[in-house]
Image 1 (cartoon, rainbow, N blue to C red):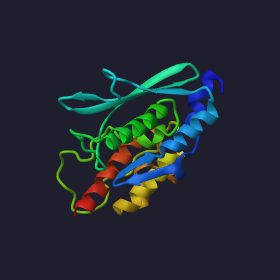
Image 2 (image 1 turned 90 degrees about the horizontal axis):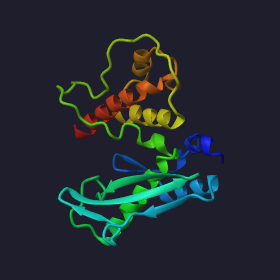
Image 3 (image 1 turned 60 degrees about the horizontal axis):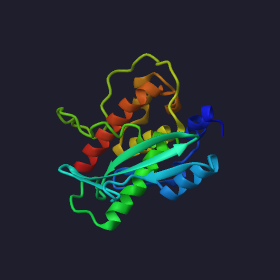
Image 4 (image 1 turned 180 degrees about the horizontal axis):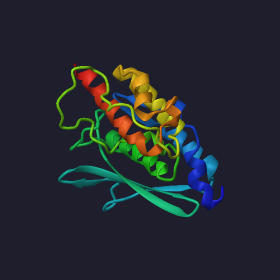
Length: 209
């Protein structure tokens, strides 16, 4: 794997069938992530960072772990809080909690190099915005817009949007009309986060009802 193509080749690997869902969150199985990484780059390495000899850091805000992954000589690190199954901080974690968080952190550190990165699209966006609740349990979109130009979204994002459409009870045609397209695959990359966020909000409203 050439260094200049390392990110692209890892990013293009289809990880969809190895994604596990816990609650409303998606995760990539860590054994698969490690296997695909080593197949792509047998020399790839990772390191669990130590804090005063311990594999975790205790702060006033919670407990954190850090993992660094090196691919083709490039090292990228990821810091991850120790969370429970509902993604809430665990202030007094067990050894199992620490180990689980290290595995999740490893997968995210690998994602920084491209593998499974699309899974985390929109993760940093709030699930609920301060707005009046819509009477219908579907995503709310403005009137149809002109067709957008730009690179299309990834296949993983398309599958995630399809699942959100089903889970939120949103009309598929309404999404297509808004973006002025005939297929979800034609949504521009720079619009992906917006449609995912709208559909996630609609799904959350439906689940809370």
